[in-house]
Length: 341
Image 1 (cartoon, rainbow, N blue to C red):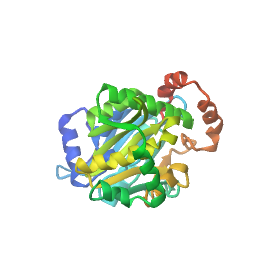
Image 2: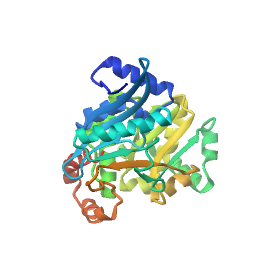
Image 3: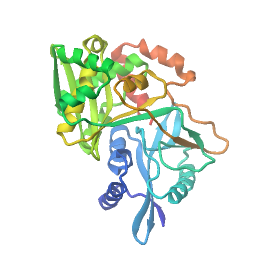
């Protein structure tokens, strides 16, 4: 039987969470991720469940994304770099076909799958993004030694700077993170997500914030998730001052050490656009890029959705956004960003 998930039902959530854990699913497969997205952005948590003999056989997490600028879509998963159907390949294909019908019923002309199996007649991209994961070393000294020489020198410079490191999830941690992250993404020309999204994630998932300060002022900060033995620095950035202070280098090294003490054995540096600045930054740390496969479906007669911030069609808007005063960018940004998905 194939049915819609009942994400208002704690028992259904519990059963899906157990299935995700039993299959070694990603953080982005978890109903808790979808619910946090809904609480933080208003984008509805949905999903499809395939059952056999009363047990879950496959699961497709979905966020129903609505943007007045970019239109409507179903994303698996919303605000995530992973997702897709979890189950046997033949079941995953069945879920995708069901998702096409589900999307049209919801007036969503687009489906985006950020991982997993999808039909061959969907649009595939295998060269746009790469993921970066490697094991953590046995101790702090070994961690430093494992970093390639040139990048290790940058980390050593950061360790010698007059910087302090704080880790937590309280009001001060959240305020420092948002201030740094908002400035960082404005400088990149992209709108900042709502504070409520970060708050919901911290409440629903295993997450914390690591902030680097110089003379008491936050200069680099990252919100990280912990899942299945891996730490994933997810929303992070630095101010203009962070660069000469080597604060970002210090931040990621401190996070590696912190995650090991928490029992993690892998560092998941997330995804980056192939051949981009962040892509080469992660390679410099000794991470080997792994190409990611994304698939999308567009309803017949509809135009393909384009919300990619690196798209040439958005270059003028990005250039303009970089020039906005920070208070204006922080006021307008969440309204736009919550529809990016």
